Length: 98
Image 1: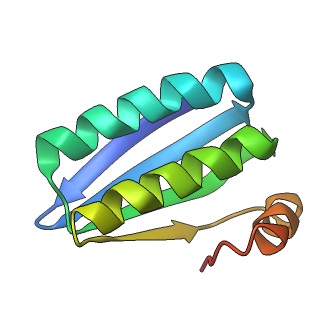
Image 2: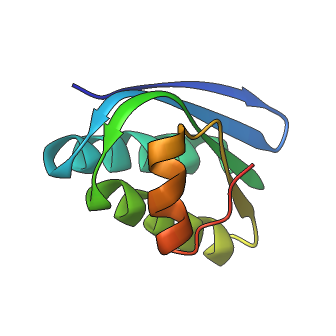
């Protein structure tokens, strides 16, 4: 089961994801992250995948949807700490990461 925790500071919101991101958990994560974006109105959203053990294509949709939302707010999204197997998927989807 996937989980997310948040920290925010100024214009930065960080979402720390953990567990397995699949179709079901991605929908729940999307709702939680979007609610936090609405509450904080950050200029930068950081999605940290350091504790994600599995991700399917639903995770790519999660990232792209949040990137589009941040872009609409004239903000940006950063993906960080992605494990190697997730980096391969990000490369295929042309998603930048740190």
